[in-house]
Amino acid sequence: MTEASTVSRYIESYPAHRVLWSRPEGERAGTPLIVLLHGYGANEADLMGLAPLLPEEFTVASLRSPQILAPGAYQWFPLVATDDFDLAQVEAASEYVLRWLDEIRTDHPSVTLLGFSMGMAMATTLLRRRPDDFAAVVGLSGFAVDPAVQNGLGSWGYVRDDELEGTVPFFWGRDQADPVITPDKVAYTLDWVRGHVDLTKVVYEGIGHSISGPEMAHVSEFLRLKVLA
Image (tube, rainbow, N blue to C red; front, side):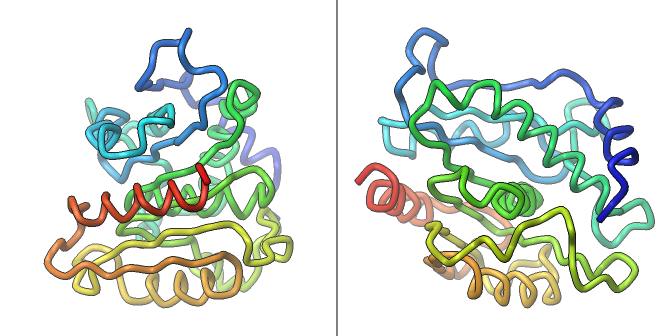
């Protein structure tokens, strides 16, 4: 497991949480929550356009990632293929989200995660760390983090994969011709989801590395069946 002191050092450098909400504060209590986790180089406003496409029963919260790339552009952790990547930064980003969630989750009967691209890597990491905390997970054009990318490690002490018994509903939407998510990431993610979640997997031709209207219609249906029902 990555040393806790290293993870703590990253977290201490992160800013206060920045969140966009679909409802004013006085109208959130008692509603199921969806947390949006944006992709690399984006910010908390990037996915809020999806909120009207989700079932109206949900409150939607979009959280900004903690590492700045440029004005208005952020990342959860460095790109996996770069020299700056390490699992400690993935863990720190996960703990950053969980600290915020622990402050607000009592207002909501359930919490669902929706992550795009690197945001899907975050959503899967959060589920792997807290297997009992989430009603469902939606991953769009993204991946799950393979610990073997760092020093050839085949295991990851931070996550609790052995406690995931294939019961958490998980929607994975992607284009097989996605030019951004590399084949090795897809292969690892496919192996991981098959062994750990209740998978709904849909392939969308022609969307590349993006999100489509038909895909969001399927996501909305998935949430109604798996969370609201």
